[in-house]
Image 1 (cartoon, rainbow, N blue to C red):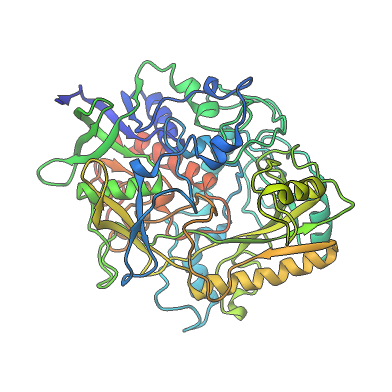
Image 2 (image 1 turned 90 degrees about the horizontal axis):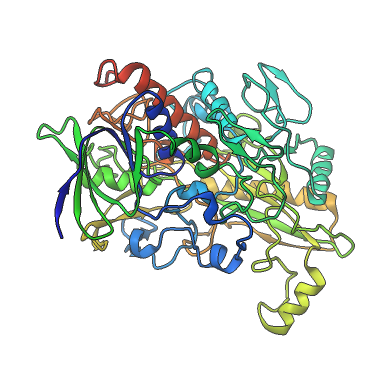
Length: 589
């Protein structure tokens, strides 16, 4: 094996998913020489499209396009006094790998946070009396206003071909959309997806109970779309293979469909695959980075010099690289000092499955984001202070797939064998779900750090998660269960089954929830409590930028991709407009 040094580039981008591809194309368009390093394999649209089959067992069970735990294991524990054990297979979440990253297999729900979500600490300080919220809660504000970030939410909508109903157009509430959304500068680019039977039943029941349902905002496009980069995205054909699958029909916005085809044609951009970045290399003073070191497919150690380093991997990857590289001070929950690792947050889900003998929902004809939701139960939209809870939920009925493995069947149906087959024959297509996806606050004792025991194949420490459910999130689940029970009563099914967290529940790493992991290298106003400034620039190493869910100070009820795209574009614009002219800190501490 050899030690190799590549030629210097202006920008090295670590990871080639959503954030990596957006940073790459935006900075390449500014004339910079950009090289991306992706630890997984090369993946293009042609690798997955028709006539290749959508294999449920391969993609949804065996996680064909996800990174393996062997290459990216984590260790997990519930408390600081617990023993952390490494993951042997993915359960609660499934990080992606290869070109496209998790953006290749996401479901495609493209909903924005609300203005209150962005300023949650300010809202909490104003709305909650002393002692109502626990003292160990560490929620924060995003360090920008709605008006500052909205143009970049709008740009990402257009990159993806957002298919949705506009709810708030420049302050005017529009029929059929979300009345609680922040003001949009432009209408949604495309009409919403077609409704299915469960959607209309849910929406009708929700309206009768006084809620304000609207179609799930979708990156599975409803019409043919040409985006600002010149890429064509095809109209969805409702095949039902979205979440955990690459799109078979060029219809789901992903790095491949929305960015890569244009990016690959740029002469000042290139990328290397099977390049596992091990460390960001700093200059002796520790104030700037000089590049990254990676292991290639042949086991060589390669140094890639660069003037700017962008850590654009999944949330875990970015935080771990900062810890391994000595960028910033590791978080210590005991002394409450340091910033790298603090404010890890996940999210919880729950729901009710309703069975109807006389209804056929045709679940095989759907898109990933097909559904209706309402946002009435989000911070500031309901009386959380009176209930003593903070956070919210999107409450929705979504018909994301009709694949047989995992199809819900009535209680008492055997889980295998002939009894399961008989149950599938009797009940397939006769059920719908009403689900909740909840926010999750950040807490002093929820964090990530380097595991002192377990190491990866290169001898480097695994990342360790310390996390469990707190009473606030469990009480929120119980409140939401009551709302869903009222909707269920209105829908009057023949029978139903429930799945919610109880007050004695603990985080279960084995059962899939979502891949919405956030925090660990958060953005904020002060280097005392955040790792990154408003432009995703490291407070400590000014030529390192870290876009991704890692920047969120807590999780909100909306899916994170819209805001991840927006903050990445916001940061890229700041690099082009400000940093290149005068390299250094963009925000003074």
